[in-house]
Image 1: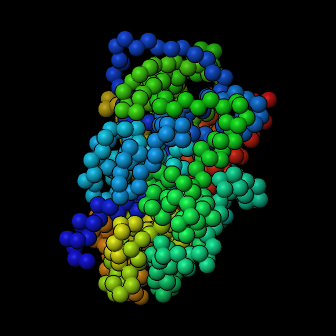
Image 2: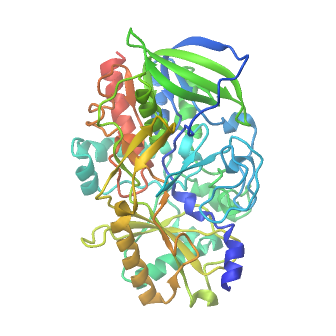
Image 3: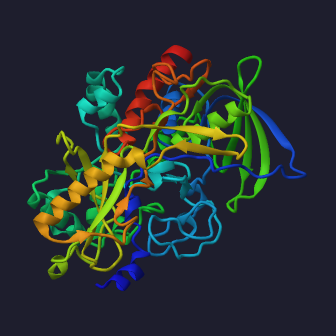
Length: 528
């Protein structure tokens, strides 16, 4: 394939997004006050903003304990809507949040009808952040890689937590509830859709790297039936970045489903929380805009609650809390917004000049199963996912998402004049990540032949790609030891904001485990 052919087909190569984890729920700004729309006022006992990992965990444990819970979700309830998720080659309604063009990491030429889609992206000066939208949050659009962090690194970044308790109780609990499983090796060896992964693993091993099999929340029993043409295809039909119609165990199929079955859960979708204010009696007043699937305001609500859990995803939580503070509606201390990071996300790729004899296969599953574990290298520690490129062509190119340490963390702020969230984050924050990427690609090419994939990202270096934002409301710093926001009673943060910028692997298992730990103690202390 020559360069022009690669560029022409590259518009379909959105495989990089398979590894996103955390979701955010609030776009910049909000609609002007619509005329003629009356504001409805109501009281709810316990409100959760967002239905991603932290919100779903909180909803299940609170409803099991007999508490009435209302989730306010900015995105669509996809199961109830009757809408279908679209495949990567044929972007449809689920492909982007209120955009008229696709927003995948590579060239985007696909026009769209404006719709409250499952995927969103926020662009900052030096980083682009992709997020999930809808009931289930980021679980709808990530690649489902359910990785438990290295214990020694978990102890390093969250020393205040009892690691033994987490590895004995909360991580196993999270994996069980999320329905984590591992693909059968015989199936992977025989299924043509995983040739890309087997080739990638063999090349890494030849270069002297250790490879590992990665668990996933996608049901591999279902996938085996897909491969035998016994059930409708999903992962093997190019579905993931815009949602999976089958096979994937998303939050709306486990945590949120179980919470709804208690009879104590109410989910209000297409409800966008604009701000939080604290009333004189200590309760909280939420300004809420209700939208339709074209993003138009159809109603306004003011919801008062005594107990509020903010689980809007890292970016949504930061915008909502910092905006509300900037407007004088709540008080926060100077620790909020600090220790933000990209979880060491750094994308890169390789073109294999010797691979055309066999290549990586015409068909790729969208669910990754292999990774390169170089974390114990004292000079170049990283964990790298072997990513698919399901373009329907044997492009002899591979894609990698590297996860690195983040020695220089950033910070989030709210610019009241511009009316938007800002980040202290630039190329200096990713210097060590690029050094690791240069080392990795050089070693891979020396052992196997090939060149850096200059057509992917910026000269082959995706320093501005972020699927795993973390931090900003760090546990035990901006909050107490269980997620209660400093200076507040009845206001909690439960999402990736609690983790200080990095966890070294795909973070949703860690987010889920930390949320389980926090809500157990919140219920014990504040909901008795």
